[in-house]
Every structure is written in C-alpha cells, then in structure tokens.
Length: 280
Image 1 (cartoon, rainbow, N blue to C red):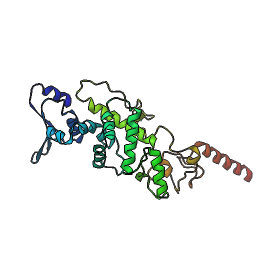
Image 2 (spheres, helix red, strand yellow):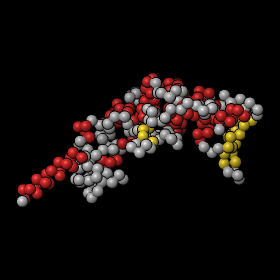
Image 3 (cartoon, one colour):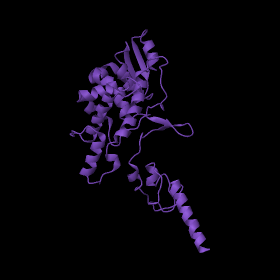
Image 4 (cartoon, one colour):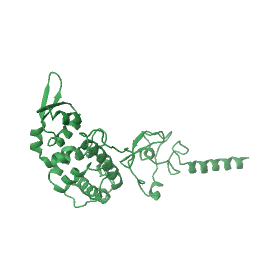
C-alpha cells in the first residue's frame, strides 16, 4: 500500500488510503513527512464515512511522536505482537510523550533488525514505570520482586511486569514488526525469518510459534516443588503444570498422567512391578 502511495505522490497532490486498520494509520503518521502529497485515510462504511487528514494529525502529535509510533504501537500490542496485561496504549503514549529517553527508545525500535542493549534498557525502565508510575527501579526482575513482597504474595501474575527474559522476547517481536512497517515503502525489503532470533521459533511440525522465554521460568529446585491438584486427568485448560509449560512430577496429586515426567513414570512402574513380585 505505501509503496504505491509513495509512487502516486510523484504524480498526484492528494492521496486517499482506504483502510480501517489502525496499523495503516500508524504507518501513515510515521511516513507523513516522506510522502510528498496530502495524505488522507478513508474509514467507515458506505453510509458513514470518516476522512482523516494525516498531515494535520501528525502536526498535532509532533514529528518526534510520529517517528516513535511504529515501535510503540507494535510493543504495546498489535495483530502480531501480544499486549501486556492491563497496560493500555493511551497510558503508554502519555509516558512516552513525557520522557525523551523513552521517546528515543521507541524511535530506534525497528530501525534495525536487532535490539541494541541501550534501547532494551530504556524499554525495561519504561516497563517498570508502566506498572509503578513513580518507581525508581529500572529492572523488570527487581520490580517483580518488590511488588510481590509489597503484596505479601497476594498478587496475580498478570499484575506483575514480565520478567527480563520474557520482556526481551516481547521486545524482539515488536522490533521485528516495527522494522517491517518502517520499510513498507521499500520494494522487496530484505526481511529475515522471524524464527531467526526475533522472538518466535518453529515447533516440531515446522509451524511458527511464540518464544515466550529463552531460559527456564525458575531454577530446577523451584520447578520440582511446583505441583497440580488435578483429580482425574491433566488437561491443558485446567492443569497448572501444563499452563506453565511444565511436566507433572511425583509431587502432583494425580500420578501417571500423560504429562508426567518420564523418569518418574518409570520409577512408579518399577515400584508396581516389585509389589506384584512380593505378592507372588
């Protein structure tokens, strides 16, 4: 769409894009300075049409915010990147508008296919302020710990910021999407595979899936203490072990389920065999 709009700008003074997608509006605002024509977006239905003057809206927001919008929109949630629980776009936008460091971080997001350390550090500090507006903490893991302690453990996981590992994977996905948007006026841009270190991976069947974390969610000694209370069967919709991507262990209430750790299942089988021998 924007490749054609850029070409049309060499022949026409006014260009109208017909789209209801928010992504189109975000990219239009970002490219408003580079497309040398008056740009409008036509939205709505046949009986109720709305025309958005992209140039006027961009002037109100300012060039700095418009440059940061692709990164901010992708990071705060879009069709391809998940959103953080209970953290809306308006709240994120106001925080970016109030802080030049965050504004620069999201302006840089998507400029290259990699996320520089300084950009991620700024986004990590931004995330901390999303969850605790007046905090001086700039590390996601540290803020998670302090919020958990402040509530004495009585807090839902969705109320905590993502850990640093998960936040990096989330930022990698946002960077990948923003990089594609920033290159939308290019003819055949060189786009790497999303599974090549950009927050996604391939499953055993070759299908693309989200890489939520690069490491383990907790040390092995902690993971071994996690258990579920399933009674008849462990199902993905109910089992706390499966929901957290873990195998069931001997600590779980139900033994011998399909999600059981293989070694534990073997030990249980050996024990049963021994009992049978004793009865004979």
